[in-house]
Picture 1: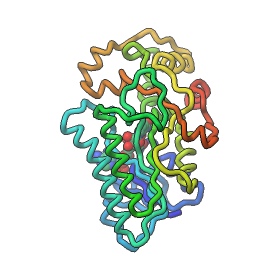
Picture 2: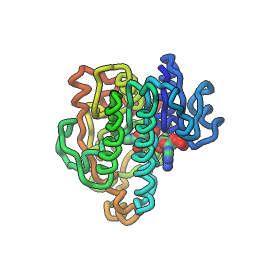
Picture 3: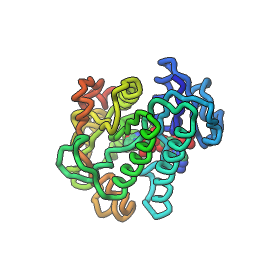
Picture 4: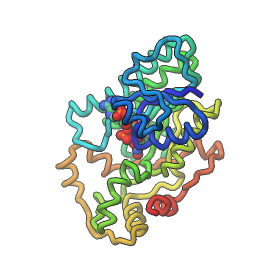
Length: 299
Ligand SMILES: NC(=O)c1ccc[n+]([C@@H]2O[C@H](COP(=O)([O-])OP(=O)(O)OC[C@H]3O[C@@H](n4cnc5c(N)ncnc54)[C@H](OP(=O)(O)O)[C@@H]3O)[C@@H](O)[C@H]2O)c1
């Protein structure tokens, strides 16, 4: 397939680029970075586009994979930051959808990013794709992002929204940030530790993206999370155990709220998300359980 990718240089984009090229697909990566940097991250054979203006009506892509977005957990959500978090996802997705509609032959499929933050903070409630959405900033961001992608269905495009959980990878994201403090025995529990963490191993995330790309019947929102989510307390214990370190520190919720404001909700709240649709289809996870997933990444 000829595939256009946004966010191809990111934590999820890089292993996905490698897997797609390994499967024989040709990639064009939309990126703000210099072409040399993109080729270094995504592979020497990728075509690099600095803007969507490069998309002429005659250029056909079989698929578009849309992962770009300003990092959500990196800074306090000031109103300027919120605007950037929204525009880097929703405006870019709307622009992509407009281009898909303008193409003489629109792509067959759009895989578009989203997150389990779509559900909001729901304490212990088990959630699947039939559950209702949340109302906080992150939930509205995801809902509007999904809606923008859904617009491509009007052009006959099969649209899948990837409601991604906390991806475990050593190349970026939450685990790579936790690794060194825990490795040095300075890992800490956050808040009361009862918040749920719906995680997924990066290898499963990549395998699922390929699965949804290739399954012509897959459509709509999918929870990309392992079938056994854990509480934050259990996660920190298991991470520390995998590194043979203790966890004896904790960060009170009040301190985190003082530093991060509303964004602290990402760490203090959580969702207990089940991959209902994938399980119903019989998808077999490479890493359904946390301990082997951590072990494979800590090797
Ligand atoms: N990793 C996770 O655990 C996780 C969980 C849930 C949802 N997600 C979502 O999945 C997507 C991919 O995740 P990731 O971990 O790979 O993210 P990432 O490492 O932060 O990469 C995101 C990519 O988006 C592009 N980007 C960043 N800021 C942008 C901006 N202001 N305007 C346009 N493009 C921008 C960048 O590409 P260039 O620099 O090349 O332009 C970057 O490589 C993200 O949208 C994220 O919100 C991730």
